Length: 454
Length: 48
Image (tube, each protein chain N blue to C red):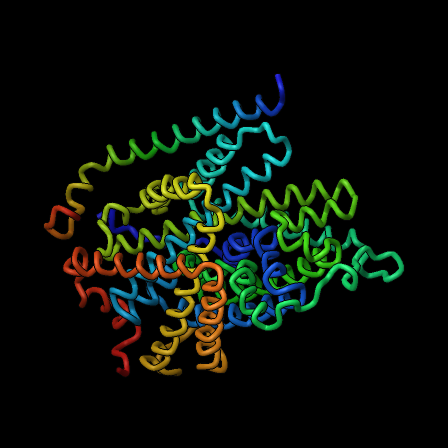
């Protein structure tokens, strides 16, 4: 049956995995991260960023190990399906869809805002619509072209950050424009400020775990996934440090803490026109790359939920020619547009981060369970995460710390988020659970790995 | 005409063209595959 066709065209390499991961995240260097400075000061910001980086290193290691053996597409959703069961899988899938759909909405809103900065009379609505419709069209017509485009625009955006760094002559103390001593403000709120800064520090890395969505579309998942995602994380770590260094050295901490486009403002501070133009283009492209990757990931998670009967199965169908989950791609477009039209950018981003943090905690729990069910040497793994269970413990502790930091400002949002996922779970148990054939559900995993130890 | 106003029109036209392309492929695909859609239900329940 044609509708049973799977997302199994193995055409992606490490370059595409890198582009998917970095493409979604790079926008965080152009905006959002700088609120860490308002919460924790300049030093609090960099401490929070590097602390969150440790969490993401742990997440990438765990995700790589589990995704290297998963028999189906769907990233963390598929891991939850085989390791935790239907209810957890439903929640992880829903969290992933909302994380990416909301991030996509935020990206296109920012595209409109950047263009409006050219001329306040510009009507941004057609540009928001055009961005979303064009990227949906790209995703509809095939994953290879989509992620190749992402590779190009992500690379250009990253190069613009490096151009800004070198334009400051940071390497020559006599002429350098970087003045960290005068511009930074240390640790004004102590370590409590670091805790409060963590939720925005996540912005530098949020979405890198989405590389797992491409597992079944990779030519060699065992090689492409670890290589692409670890290179992606390294790129982001370098980018985060460079971004903090350049912005903190060019803009005073008070201004930087509230800036809508910190890297662009840093470019303006250099007084060099070519740098300003490069950063304008870089900011725009980073938003488009992020939205592009989000459409890819959200549609695959939605399609996987539908494929397994957790949602009505109309969304599971794969395009006969382009081999993409075309119904899911089209269905999610107006939903993202609706989020974008709410205009509540901070609320959208907060819910996206909240959903991601819950996924990270569940990923760590899955890893602990995976190693218990299938200890090392019982099944063949494409990648083995070192020093287990430390990465899982680090992830749980740091994700909980970020949630506590988030509750300082967005406590009500967290409660509403918990209420939303609880109600969704009740709906799932009442309306969808009966459609799930549990033996079918686990069989693929058992066929591939054999019976688990527990 | 102001370049910003012109760019608005261009953006609207491109949006309309791309949307039409997406929808025409979607409708064509759904229409041609109607037969498959009928045999697509793995479970008898109407909701699916």
